[in-house]
Length: 431
Image 1 (cartoon, rainbow, N blue to C red):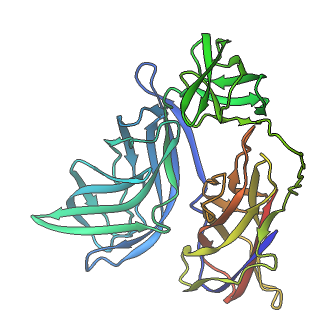
Image 2: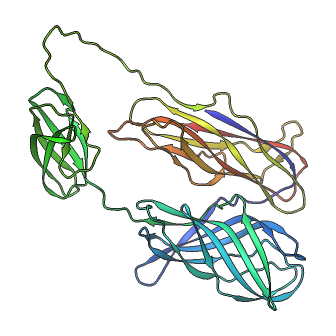
Image 3: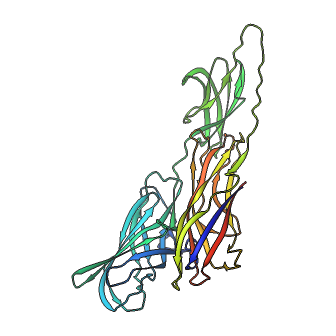
């Protein structure tokens, strides 16, 4: 278990955490379905003079198809919601919005049609919803592509003069505004297991596989990639699970079910050797599953803000914790995060409405690691454990390795509180 300490010197505040997401499903024409989600995104807006700059939450409502294929161009509907900027004067302009989205790992722009807008002093601008398209990136088969806000630019045309307002989400890109499930490619046939996976000449081996067409299958023994001449036969059922029986009569270093892709399953051929036999045993003991550093991390600074009567947010980065999985098996693990309330234990002041969120990251730090890791979904950290990273169980395959778990963080503060130094403790745990 590792403890992260976050010290905040607060002279200001903010509101509800914008990493929390909600959404529903609506029907489209025919059998197609689309998901609609509304997400609060905190933004810093740079407005042209004499309009003052501003910041705050903007509710983005985005509709996307539930599913698509990699490379498809799919429709998207964007309703930006009321802007965090408050106009200081009334005027009529023709506005065009250019919304830069992070679609998976790609950056794409959706542009609205020109809209005649009557700006009223003291009232936030609420642009109309508009539709466009995005392209599902190649190579995303079998994944869920997240769509996030990267930048929002509005060009206001006033009698031929264009005034540009740029709103940047914090953190950038924002939390997910919606997602599209991408169809998986047909699974390649693979050889999954040999029973036994070693033996001398004459050893009978049962070979199993997955994703094969139903019907008869054959299997072959290999040496340095070439077929040795030993073959066998079997069948695959309707689910694609194949079983094949083969007898190894000559030296081989792998066995496959024919038609499967590499890597094939290794076979250890035991050759008889003349002379005096001297067995040598070695025992490999399991190591720990550990999350470090054991004594905790140094404090993370999120800077300082000044009370102005409005909700405010500040961003920072969690120090990366180390995960070491030396168990030598096929088990997985989860890293979760919890936190304590924002307090100053000396003065007794607290911030019950302050929230902290994380956009998790997880990277492999040892290239020899047999496993990869997956970062959790961005969200708010509370007293209920939130999954921030995981390693999947391996089934028959070896798992483990060394990893770094961390991510971007954002603290959202209420409009009013005592000016004081506050602290919350975020604790990462592994199981």
